[in-house]
Image (cartoon, rainbow, N blue to C red; front, side, top):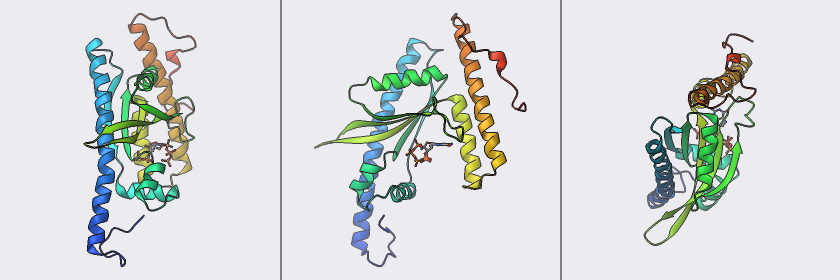
Amino acid sequence: MTDLSPEAPSLTMADFFELSDELNGFLLMYRFGLEEMLTKVNILRDELSHADPSGCPIEHVSHRLKHPKSVAEKAERLGCLPSFADVRSKVWDIAGIRIVCSFVTDAYHVLGMLQRQPDLTVVTVKDYIAEPKSSGYKSLHLIVELPVFLSERTEMVRVEVQIRTVAMDFWASLEHKIYYKYRTDVPQRLRDDLVAIAEATDRLDQQMEQLHLESRGHAPLPGLDHRSVRPLSEP
Ligand code: 0O2
């Protein structure tokens, strides 16, 4: 990526401001995409809450724009040329939205609702719930593309959507903090504990979903015994 600091030897002040302006315009498009996507998710949440005030599958929604430094790191890792067009075509998670659901089945329901929206293209789906990462991380990851209508043109913007349960979110947030503290050097014992806690989190998800179903008069799911949830200290 281009060095934007005014100290960069080959950059005049005019160049510097021009590039800064270009970067702002580049990121602005992702902010617009994020706003469009948030509107869609908030509409779903409000509609579902209205239909069933105690049964809305969406617990909360958060969003972030990747910091330019993180975009640059990822662009470099992906071998991008130092051009906004190349970064746009290869880095797909500059805008990100996280939808936290009550239960695992809710996560898949929300995925289905998004897949059915005609102006939204689901470019990729990675199902880390069915196939968790080796760290224990679980979530549904989607890259969606949606139109942003500007004064004189329409831009298609990609947004990463992560869908997970409250329990998965709890695990991922704490795991992220631990990794942030140790950087890449997380002791193996901690890694093993995190995997074990992810498994316990999974059992909690199953137990809560089971209780939820029973409370709504549904038959228990076969093979799901909530008494199998063990305390975390057990091996
Ligand atoms: P942030 O702060 O969310 O921007 P990548 O890892 O990005 O090179 P890919 O295929 O683009 O690879 O993305 P992937 O693996 O589908 O998902 C990347 C994002 O998922 C991460 O974004 C995290 O938000 C989340 N994630 C993936 N694996 C883990 C994990 O093991 N633990 C936790 N806590 N989160 C994970 P960023 O860009 O790393 O961070």
